Image: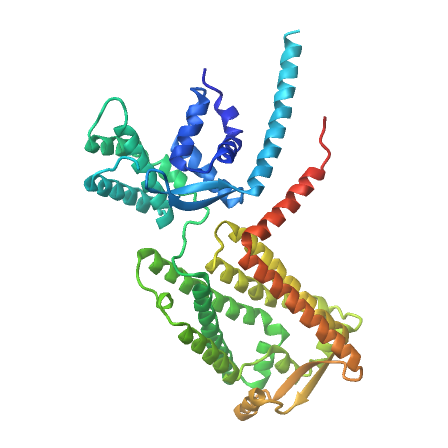
Length: 111
Length: 357
């Protein structure tokens, strides 16, 4: 089952921050990691991830740094900042509330 | 270490990254990021179960990025499309020299205008009524600075040599000192001096008296006159950009600049004692006398009959100056810390809002 695009779109920043909170990485690997986690629910392309990374960098929620990857190549790594972790915490909390409300309404529908 | 691509494949990918980057106006940093992604993508194809040749992988990668609306468009949304390879101090030194040079040229233009006008016309032109014209001249000088900086950026982007890239520090220092001296030597024409010559002392003096209706239009003229003072530091910050913090830093600096000017004016407005003197008081005004025009100087002296007031007022101004200089230094030297503090303030305000449950 593929998820609705709007639903995925609303959580893109959160997904990127969550992935970077686990480990700093670069664009290509980030796409791979998220698509792997999604397990077919959705599939992100470059056009989705890079604008988000750059937007988060602009907002100071992530910072970028060129460094050598384990492949021996120079890649632009993105690190989550303290502000990014705080925003992530708030975002997750909002999602949990949203999720709780949707589930409650769903239960009401099912009687 | 990961698999390596052949030099031919790397060259083909570099070319592809350059093609996409140039067509989209990406800077070197974004092009390098794009190249890295193309390289990984190609290696990804090569590591697939259906083994393909490097040439095929490049073709697939090219095909994948053939859609001009996808990845290149995304990279074009970079927050900082240009990053100079020249250090910040060097860039600021270059813009200092440029600003001073344009300032000297501006003073010369004002002097030439003054020399071409008869006394009455000059009074009108350089007096309060002429402030909008002075604003136009200052706006032109700022425009000249901006266009020159744009040109230097373009040259840097193309990889051409720009004079400040390898200019020794001693030359920078000499230029700055020489231009300041030159500007000091050029007999500039100050607005209030000429206004005073036209008998406008009472008008200016009434700033501290119950306001005359005309004072409101004068406030407007002062506001117009301040605009270049706000734009100038923005230009400097834009030139010495702090990457993702540029917009915030620009706005904060504009506010700080306005705040600095306002607070510095407080003692002058409260304790100021405008005095208009005839004749020279220093070498700058000696030049006026030598020119045979505008031999009047206005001085915003602090109440001389109350020395304590003078000491307190100057102490206050020194404190304000140190405060703003310190804030600016922290902003430039510790941008991450400054922005994280500001971010915390913003988020705290958001958190204070009640959450509906």
